[in-house]
Amino acid sequence: MRKQAAGAQRHFPKLWAKRLSEAEYVEMLLSPRLHLDYLLSGQSEDMYHLTSIAGVFNVATALAHMRRDLRSIPYYEASLALLLDIARSGLHEQASAHRLRRYFNSADDYLLCHSRQELEHAVHLVRQQILSGQATPLLAA
Image 1 (cartoon, rainbow, N blue to C red):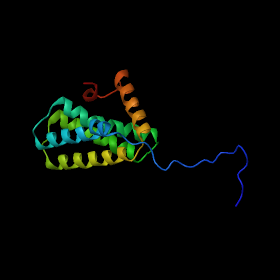
Image 2 (cartoon, rainbow, N blue to C red):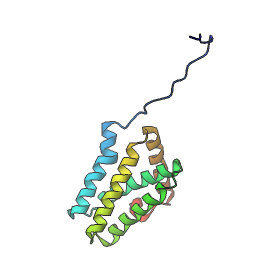
Image 3 (tube, one colour):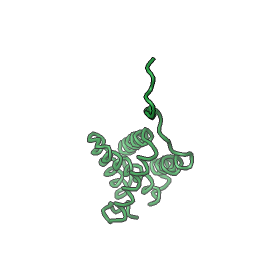
Image 4 (cartoon, one colour):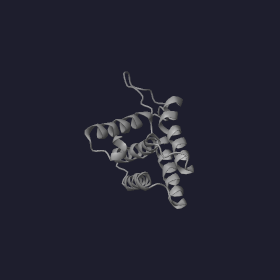
């Protein structure tokens, strides 16, 4: 067995990343999921519920931009466009509801597989975009 040189440090790769706390998980992912259920069941078209759902798609899009994930960027942008269309004209087709739920599940899974630090940075980017006035009308509400 080789001896380690004096003063040399061993570097081990990080095998885990710090994940979201339970409260952060509820605020960021569970509440929007409940709001989506309310929207798709026709119980509510509250603007707060719509912005909550749109926030998940915005953070997923920002994360895809940060990671230069070229396959995911158009997917989450299309998801947001579908949500904006539903916000404008209402939910009339069951196919749109199914597609929105599938998009939301995909965004949820995408967010869960990233570290807390990456998520915080993506949320910060979304907030900066909203504050600068470059956000869509639904998100600026």
